[in-house]
Image (cartoon, rainbow, N blue to C red; front, side, top):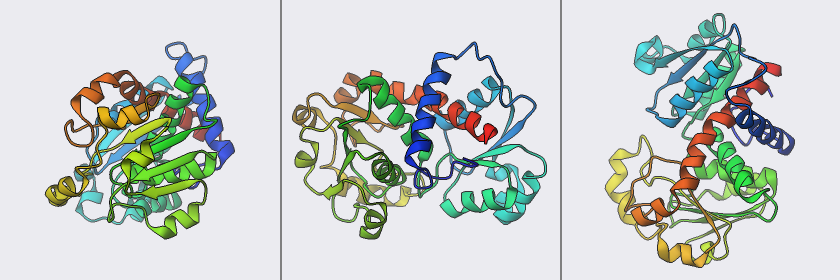
Length: 298
């Protein structure tokens, strides 16, 4: 594995290995025998704001012995229109790796191609691979394995997180149910390309029944703010709440944060499952450290 650009680009064995190494990283935090990033300098290049992603990557790179610099789009010439391929060719001559959080999936892929250095997708409009790897790790920690897993994703079924869940289900062989209204369902060509046991429905209650995991994300993703009123109106019936949880009484309730309580999830349900949700957030650190160490060893 030379880069982490998407879940789509990973195989089952690679995902399983990342999850195994994440467990080692979590157990060994604070007394790592090795510092695989020692002497390296990594850049965090973010065009989108962040809390968990920035903190977890900065912390993780430092804990693995590396140096890190944070570069917002306006801090570098990329924010003034320099082509990504030119930025990449400069960065590739100076840095050892880059973590990129931006809009277009192609920008991350082009950066990896033209820079020649290890590149990690820290979120694009196309995918959010680090989040889903951390979620899978959290599920294994809690349930013991992915065997017999059925995940119900509720809300905008065509957002970056949902798309990464589609590829994770296809690669790892578990059931994924997407509960979303028309206009917020993943395109047929994506589902056909992914394969796997994935179903899409507008019937939230049917999708939730007996699920192992109930999962949601914000209704208004970054860059969609002008659509906020319309999105809230059309997605208002796709909320994780006590009534939905009663349909799947044994389900883990998960949210990738930030959460807008009273919209995609009620405050009461969020607080009842806060331990799982904040474990997800913590596990971003350990899973991303696993990815970083594996890229260095590649």
